[in-house]
Length: 103
Image (cartoon, rainbow, N blue to C red; front, side, top):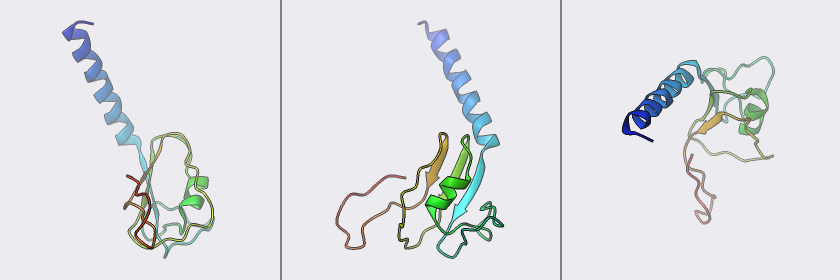
């Protein structure tokens, strides 16, 4: 691959990233939220209460679920669809021991 081809591929890749980020939708989770069909999760005021519920609601594609800082109790496993990013603080066990995950 020539330097020109490599540069051309990088430009195409960066262009695709720009398009994806421009069409991305943001959704929010906070313990003060409500897991209900009449909430759309598109703002902190209409946020959902659990990550698992948010993952069930958000369609595949360029989407982002923002988990707002707080203390959460997971009652079931969350399975995000393809293309859905989860953004938020790094989870840690209450006792401070155990794995930390980059989000």
